[in-house]
Each structure stands twice: as C-alpha cells, then as structure tokens.
Image (cartoon, rainbow, N blue to C red; front, side, top):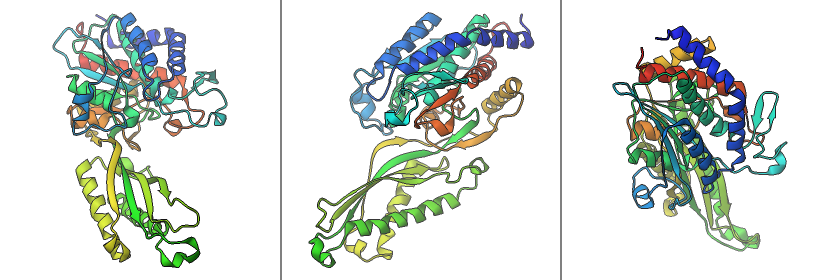
Length: 426
C-alpha cells in the first residue's frame, strides 16, 4: 500500500515526466481551430487521446429534436451535424463517489488577425506561455484534466468511483453540449470545470441572457426633423433607464464573493441598429445586449424584473405610453449556478490545493457564465469552476496560458479525484 506521501510523489513525478508531451498535445489542440460548427477536427484529437488512455469513449451529435425542445436550450444553431460531443469514462471498481471533469472544445472566433503578434492558431510557446485562440478558454484546462487522469493511471491507483471526462460543444453559445450530456444520463456526485479562473475557485457563477429592445420613433424628412420623433434620441433615454436598473440590481448584492468584482451582474449594451437613410428621421432602433443574472435568482425572476422596469419608461417620457418599447429575449443564455463554499467537495478541493500550492485558494464568484449552471440546476451536481487559464485574456487577442499553471492545476485535480472517488488500495 502506498502512503499518501508516496502517492503525492508519484503523481508529481508522473506530471513532471509528461510536461513536454502535454505541451505538444495542447499545441495540437490549439492548432485545431474549433469555432462553432468546426469542432469535429479537435474532437477527433480528443477521441484519439482518450482511446490511447484506455477510457470508455462515447461520441454522439446532439439530437436536434430532443435538445431544441428543452426549456434550457439556448443556441443560434438548431442542427449539430459535424459537431460531436465526446465523453471518456474511467470506470471505478465500485463503492466510491463519481466526478465529472467538464471542458468545452469550442472557441470564439479569432477576430482581427492583425491584432495578434503570431497567428491565432499557432500554439507558439514563449517565456513559459503558450499563445493561441482557445488556449486559455479553455483547452489548457481540458489538457490539465487529461493529465490528471493520466497521472492517476500511471500511479496504478484503482479508483472506486467513476471519472467522467467531457469534451463538449457549444459552451460559448449557451451550453448545448453539456445539456446534451446531462440528457444522455451523464451525472455524478461532483464536477470540476477548468475555465480560466487564474487558479481561483468559483463556487458561484452569474447567469446571463441576450435581449433585444425595439424603440419606436416617427419618421420625417431630415430637413424638417422637428416634424418627426427620432428613435435614436428615444433610445438614449432607454439606455440610461437600463443603466439605472443595473445600478439598483448590483447595489442589492452583498455576497462577499463579489467584493472584488466592480459590477457583479452587468447589463451590457452590445449592439445598436437604427435608421435607414441619413436624410430621414429614424422611426425604429433595435438595441441588443446581455443581461447578467445573480446566482441567487432564477432566469424567470430576472426576466420579470427587466420587463417591469421597461414598462416604467412611460414615467420618464409620455412617448413610451403610446409607443411602448418591445422587449424580446433571444439567442444565448447561461443559467446561474451556486455551491455553498462550505460544501464538502469545496473543502476537499481546497485542502488539495493547499497541499500542492502551499497556500489557501482565493475564492470568488465568476464574472461570467459557465456550464456550471446547467450542471447544478439540471443535474443537481455540486460544481466548482477552477482552472489554469488567464481570466483577463479569454476572448482577447494574443490569448495565452502559463504552462506551469496547467501542470499545477492537474496535480491539484489528480489528488482531489483520488480522495473524492476513493482509492481501492487505501
């Protein structure tokens, strides 16, 4: 029987011996561009890796009819041919607790390539960092999960509980992949999502949803604009009104996990379109945005508050009494998620973090939505978001990850898996 000290040594030695191999794997993953609808190539690499590890591999494309009819489905797509989910299971001997290791393979587009120092999908390594779209959000975290499992296998540790590795699609568009995995029956006693948290623990994640506002005006010739009513000018009133709601909602949040986040649940205006001719008064403006949802409220409660607030526009301008603003919810949506920081899984993960890193973890609330809301809301799975990526570089040009953080994260997760799932040999 190995002592806990020997286990720690073996796990660390295994991780250290695989560093070059893992760097190569991460580079290959990054080079496989996996924007929405283009995930198949990257998932093929995941499948190959899982098969080499000897895991039971399940590959399927989400069923459009089943998934789109679910109340929590949210995506700009309704067809998923060519975009498979991949799950690999390391079966336990029985009698232990199970764990899901959930990572998404999809990445956001690279944007303006001229803003990148190197090609967005180069996977170039400089000064201990790897660069590339998706390397921090979140292929580096996915590779850390794989490395944790490999280290356990190399240490010949027989786990009692199952380890369920998930490489899912569509997280960036609302979580279709994770929803499909839940509907396929993949549930567990706990879950880790290695999103880019800078190695912090996020037991709570805000939710969010996209909205449209249709602001009406009255068309007229630009030369006699006083005969019309500009929807653009009216939209300024609407936007200021929304900023008031944002302040009210955020002033009500007292959870200490949000104390370092300037705006815990933002309402972001991301797109405005209005008018069709420079010499005409615009009669319609469409405002699109993202509405943050607190972990302490439901999507439905947040929607109702926004609805009632928009109705109050008439108190500021009688125009909106006769021509009310139309509110529409569309596109992507992420459920809020919450886990008690005193939960036993959080405590265990924190203990293993301290053993490996030598200091207690920083615990905060997530500044963005994750698939954790789906796991907690639909699967009732205690979920912690914890990963090696750089929070500030997700979706940014010159996105990077610190490679040593990938290895440290894998070590923490490996020890957490062993203690959570149980070691058959004691």
